[in-house]
Length: 186
Image (cartoon, rainbow, N blue to C red; front, side, top):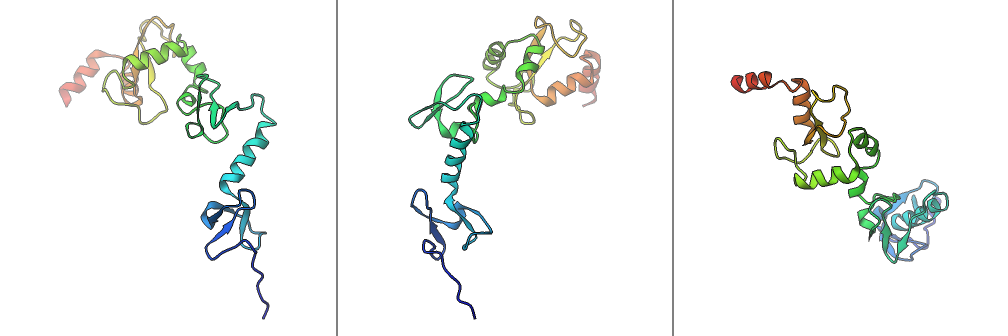
C-alpha cells in the first residue's frame, strides 16, 4: 500500500496560503485538481488581488487607488472596494447608467436630468409609488401624442415609472377610456 504524501502546509480542514501566509479553511481556496490537496496555493482573496493587478496592465482606463479606496470613473469619487463589482472601474450605484446612457439620451434627457427626476420622485414609480423590482432602473414615460416614435423629444416626459406600470400604459396605448373600463371592471 502506497503512503500518501501530505502537503507540508495542509492541516486537517485548512491550509496555509503561500501568498499571505495565513491559515484558512479549504472553502477559502479555489479547487485545483492538479494540486496534492485539490486546492490552489493562493487563497481566493490573494487570487482576486493578483488578477486585478494583472488585469490593470491591460486596461484602457486603469483603476486609480487612494490607499484602500478605489476611484469611480463615473461619479469621480474615491470609495471603499466593497462599493465596486469585482474588477470594474465604476461603483455599484453608477453601474445602472452604464449601457443605458444611450437609451436615456434617446429619450431627450441627460443623465443628470434623469438623476434629478429620480431624486424628485424619491426613487419610486410615479404611479404606484414603489421602487423598480424587475429592471435595473425606472423607465422614462413620455406623452405618445407628442412623439409617436418609441423615443421622446425630451419636452413631453411625464415621469419615471416601474416596468409594470409602464407596460400597462403601453398596452392600453395611454387610452383613458380603456383604463376607466378596467377600473369599472375591477
